[in-house]
Length: 211
Image (cartoon, rainbow, N blue to C red; front, side, top):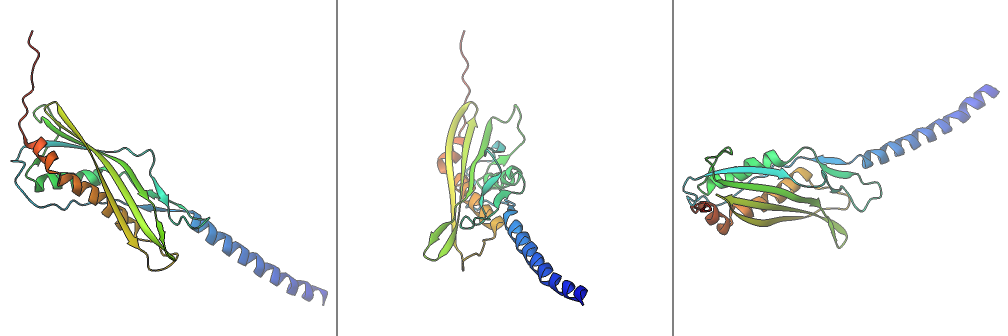
């Protein structure tokens, strides 16, 4: 009889232990964080402004780390949001498309290619804001573009920002889409900058020192 009572008394303890383990597992899952893949696109009006001149493109992820922010900054157990891989290759594809749409010809770097564009991703951040009772998903991106036309240079900075209203508390946005759209805006601003386009299109003669 005593053995039966002891067996019965162990069951509530086992159930309590199982419940505690379940809660701990859920908390740790929330701390794990998420990764987002950035696949930007450039949408600009197609024009033949570049006259087909060759431009070499280089894209660099110049951020200090791959961290973008916290998945849910309102939670003490929120995990970090990071980029899943280096976004530079996908950004380069988008930049080259933008140049083609403006009439340029992307080309491999070489002595015969005197026009070069270097794009640096300086910032990509998830900075949600609270509006009333709900959280609004907000992402920002910043790029620095250095154009070199046969020795003459121009440096420009472009930004992109996206804000989504989330339908309810605790709802997370589609981070892949949110970050990709934000970087796309910054790159599209670059590809639509007529001052930059005119600088790359013009013919610059390199001067030499006379001895």
